[in-house]
Length: 161
Ligand SMILES: CC(C)(COP(=O)(O)OP(=O)(O)OC[C@H]1O[C@@H](n2cnc3c(N)ncnc32)[C@H](O)[C@@H]1OP(=O)(O)O)[C@@H](O)C(=O)NCCC(=O)NCCS
Image 1: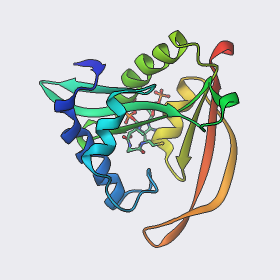
Image 2: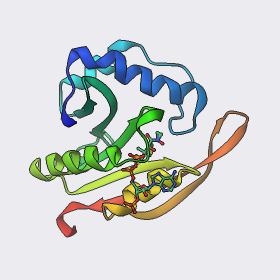
Image 3: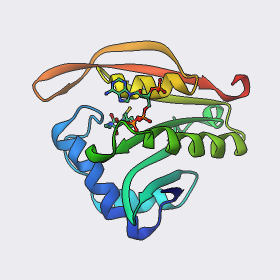
Image 4: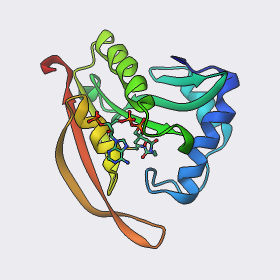
């Protein structure tokens, strides 16, 4: 078991994990699966894209991305984490976030945000465990799988953690 930077050979597995949520979950508001190039772009630039590998198989990934492009947001990042269904509930999400948040600290990031479509008790427990606080809810901003979905914003100020 290890957490490491994603490589080109991991992208098909990452895409499969994400595409399952596009089709059948609310964790993402995408409704059309993004092409492989979408993931290739995340291997370079200011992003971190980490995978958790067990017995040579990628079972989940976590990433950080720019929150908004305007310059005053430079030390803020948005993060997320997705696991294959078979890997959930046994600490893999926690393992990925521990490495990702260390990376962001080392980068000098000040504030980390997560946007969690409701309900998602597993994701909320994961973020709470790292000290994130729920700072607000946007009501009914998404429409997916036949219903309106709220998003909750969770924030962690790294310098305070
Ligand atoms: C959300 C997700 C990443 C959590 O990762 P995970 O590896 O399953 O979670 P962990 O095993 O590391 O557990 C983290 C915490 O969540 C809790 N938890 C896990 N599954 C839970 C569930 N179904 N309900 C309530 N709490 C849960 C654990 O008890 C643990 O809490 P603790 O730190 O207080 O002990 C994972 O379930 C997932 O990939 N879900 C689908 C995609 C998704 O929703 N991504 C998040 C988008 S915001």
